[in-house]
Length: 69
Image 1 (tube, rainbow, N blue to C red):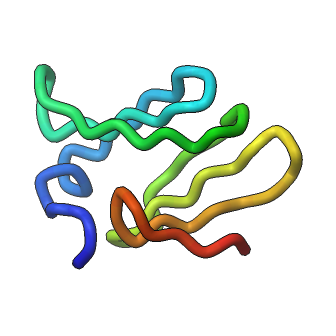
Image 2: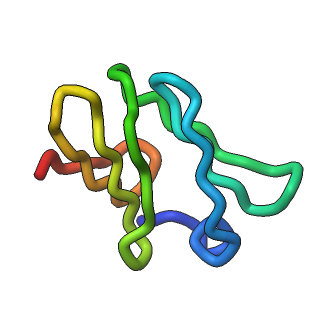
Image 3: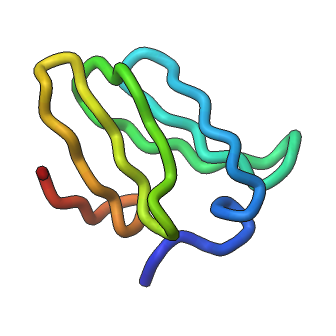
């Protein structure tokens, strides 16, 4: 199961060190703990690409499932 469409539609991502917050509106968000320093995060359709300081990129299908690309 992928991310709820309300997060994808709102489109706002906030990087906070080793976490990425995915917003559904101004007050509601989902937090993903990456465990490494995050340098960039962006949506690719309904999947989330997260770039880390070690040069690796993770593609999240949901809050708990990712593939390193």
